Every structure is written in structure tokens, then in C-alpha cells.
Length: 83
Ligand SMILES: [Zn+2]
Ligand SMILES: [Zn+2]
Image (cartoon, rainbow, N blue to C red; front, side):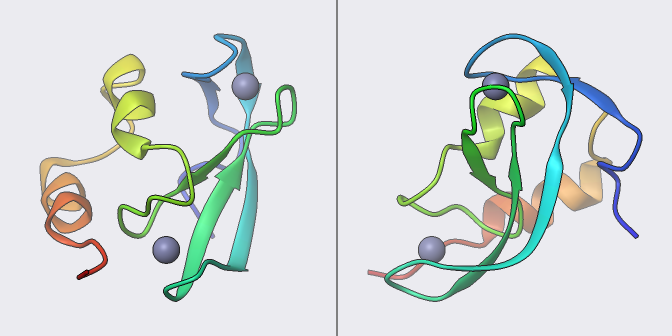
């Protein structure tokens, strides 16, 4: 279950309204993420924490302000890879 199911969102990369594909596990050089992928432009956004390997979820959030609760937002932006 995830918040992206049946939720049309504006993609911050191609600016189409799309239903993102949810990918439960994808590896980056530093760990494993949950990501969503735009079915139109195939851009990937990490949704569990910020990651330099994927697009910034923040851009998506700014276009779709109802996407996250404040608490979810805080959780997301407080987590990122430690370099
Ligand atoms: Zn897109
Ligand atoms: Zn990563």
C-alpha cells in the first residue's frame, strides 16, 4: 500500500499528470531505496530519503503540495545519506 496508487501527480521532470509506478527496492551506490518512476519520462524519484542518484522528491512535492503530511515531509527531509 502506498500513497502513489491511484494518485495522479504532476511529474516535475516532464510536467505531465501521471500515476507513478512504485518500485519497492532499488539499489544505489550507498544503499537501497523505495522509488517512484514516472511512466512517461521514466524519471526516478527516491521517496524514502534524499539520494544523489535519483531526482529530488522535493521538486515533486512542490508541484503536489497535498502529497505528504507535514510529519512525512519532516521524516523525508531529515534523512539522507551521510557522506
Ligand atoms: Zn515525467
Ligand atoms: Zn541512495
